[in-house]
Amino acid sequence: MYLFELKSMRKSTIIWTCALVALAALYLSIFPSMANSAADFKKLLSGYPAQVRAILNINLDYITSILGFYSMIFSFIMLCGAIQAMNLGVSILSKETRERTADFLLVKPVSRAAIITAKLMAAFTTILATNIVFFAAADILANTFKAADFDQKLFFMINLTLLFIQLIFFAIGMVISVFFKKIRSVLPISLGVVFGLYIVGALFATGKNNEVVRYISPFKYFDLTYIIKNASYEASYLIAGAVIMAVSVAASYVVYIKKDIYAVN
Image 1 (spheres, rainbow, N blue to C red):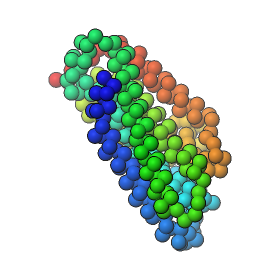
Image 2 (image 1 turned 60 degrees about the horizontal axis):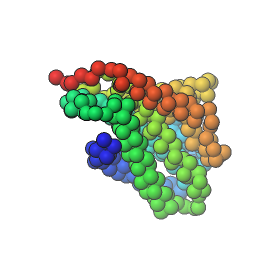
Image 3 (image 1 turned 90 degrees about the horizontal axis):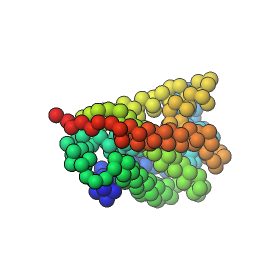
Image 4 (image 1 turned 60 degrees about the vertical axis):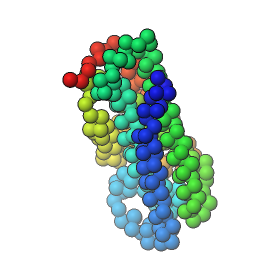
């Protein structure tokens, strides 16, 4: 089952990975021209309201460095990665119903727990492979377009947040899918949840109680400026992300093992 699931995910994984790399290449290719007119670019961004700069992860102290510039564009890469992971999470347990193969799978001499585990491991492998390829490509691109040397450890830590975000949204998608009897289309659910949480984080995480409100949106669990300044993650948000993943996966096991599986008419 594990190898079969990997094979079935191969095409979409390649497409999504290429899309993430292309997005990074597009944005990083702009950096040299920005670095040549850094003063004007910084002056332009300083005219933006503080709330807008916070939403876009713009820190004027770092924006002219490649790490600061990368942290600004990385929010869009995380958004794209979250959609990939959410699609995977919603579809991985529901596709048997959509493709009318549920009866064929469930009559096999294998437990539902084993089915979930195989699918879960295949999805994790896929997400991990995506991140490995993306990081390798992003590192090459950053070194190609850099104007000066940068801290490789910080660059790795920034990119590692993509893996964390994808695992969180995969788990959320997985638990959402088990509560639906039938899911005819994955994309509307994925886009609705991802963009909804992204907008919530963007609109409300700049208020007075932003430290508390940040727990609502996983996109705000990783403050890239904080990472650049402190070379570390915020422990409380890492714990929150781990709790979301653990609870979501555990609930998926419990509900899927007990639920009735319906075929699509």
